[in-house]
Amino acid sequence: MTQKAFVCALCLAILNLSSPSVAQAGLVGTLQAVESHTRAQDLATVNAALARDEVRAKFIELGVNPTTVDARVAALTDSELRTLADRMDAMPAGGDFLAIVGLVFVVLMILEFVGVIDIFKKFP
Amino acid sequence: MKSWTHATLCVAAFALAGCASQTRVPSAPGLGGLPTRVELSGTPFFPQEDHECGPAALATVLGAAGVDATPADLADAIYLPGRQGTLQPELAAAARAHGRLAYELPSSVDAVRAELAAGRPVLVLQKLGAGPWPGWHYAVVFGYDRDKDEILLRSGTQPREVESTRLFDTTWARAGRWAIVVLRPGDLPATPDLERYMSAAASLEAVGRPEDARTAYLSAARHWPEAALPHLGLANLAAARNDWPAAEQGFREAARLEPGNVSALNNHAEALLHMGCPESARREIERAREAAGTGPLAGTVAATRAGIVAAMGEDGPGCPSGR
Image (cartoon, each protein chain N blue to C red):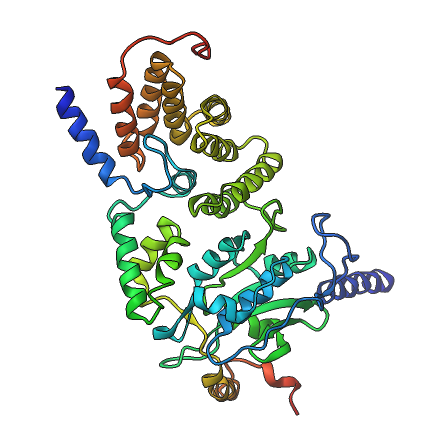
């Protein structure tokens, strides 16, 4: 009976989403406590260790230097890793500036012309 | 009758004039009014190169928070060549790596202005393009003017980009109105929210910066004296140092401040076990189990409970008196 309970607890512990390298066994980590305070953790999303591996692989695919990728992944929290593992491809990557400056002006001019915006009233 | 009409019109005109302009006396933030205009001209400026607005923007706000880092230093940590840009979580991660708290602001221009009035520039994401060229772009807001209805940004290669508030808000709204300020661990944002602050502070702990987290938790405990979370954080740090008496005390305080808090109850039980108080631990973990119900922490509580139940026996001397 005790053994069954122990195995059961072990299974539950493995499913526990907190990072083993940070939270002590038996303790709810502070970040985990905050997140459970604000919203129910999504138990359906992948376990943190798997998320870490997935993000690491994706980073390498996206050209991150293999010597720095571990540090980059280690700098992210479990929930950030889960978010990135879930939807990195759909997330905005800020940086596309020089290529679109001209396009922005054209877009704004069109919107101004069709009356959607009127930010150019100060322009002669 | 004429004088009444006249008086009413005067009052109406005065009221409308009040709406049209900033009538509040410039005052310090937190005293109920923001200055009419703010320009943080001391904000650093790093002209962007290629697609590296992320490193440039981050270097700017880190510089304003006392960290000397160039965009080149930061690019290795945040630039993704395959996406030709930087992801938002990595900006926060890099700020943390430099011992700073990345605090996500409420989604309003007023919240941005409040930070500026408190002397802090704000890193924002904007969507400048459309369709196949979304034009995701990071910039740093370093000023505003209520009279002219303008927002000032360090943006790309422009040290002083002036945008109408409306244009700024439109491009910012299209990017989800995401904005962060970078804080020294002891500092609080202009519009502090307990859970957002604790999330940012706990992230410092989670990535192995316990001293920075401790400073932040102490600030939180001072600012929100009735909140359990700061005490929970401090107690977790104590536990990590194997200072179980301090941890037990902190968890006990957290549970006192917020009786239904599953994390506080769970961790208190664990600390009691480490203190040689298995009887008290058993009592406390039952409370935790009840409070956890079928919620997200039920699994963690069950695991903790298994360890406590396995350790049989009574409380030793020096255990906190039972409740």
